[in-house]
Length: 150
Image 1 (cartoon, helix red, strand yellow):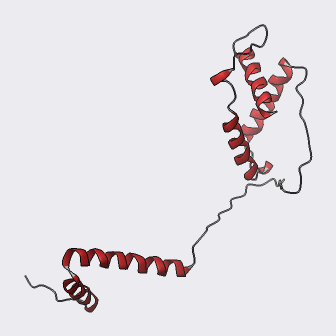
Image 2: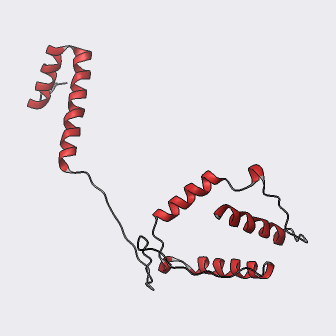
């Protein structure tokens, strides 16, 4: 259904832009709507909440202009209203909203990651210097080490 509507809109826009006497069926094959893309796009749009309050004036003007153009070229163009199920929520505020969400990992993850990185670095040091030299280097580092005099 969505593919058919996209195809209709594309052919109508082509008719208006190129001033054709009748709509041509030029969007076929690779030029036609791609089902996989449309399904992925529709899924993404369905996952994101859309707030009418966040439409800027340009978006509203674009919607109104598109509606007027479609009414000029087709007698069937009309705004359709429908009721959504409870899984969708639309907000109707008249003010701009800025919302920030931060997802953070728990502190235990940081400690585990730090221990894993330290073990990896120690293993690399052992591979390069040998076990006795690596232990000596780490103990010197922990103790503060002896500063070399120039």
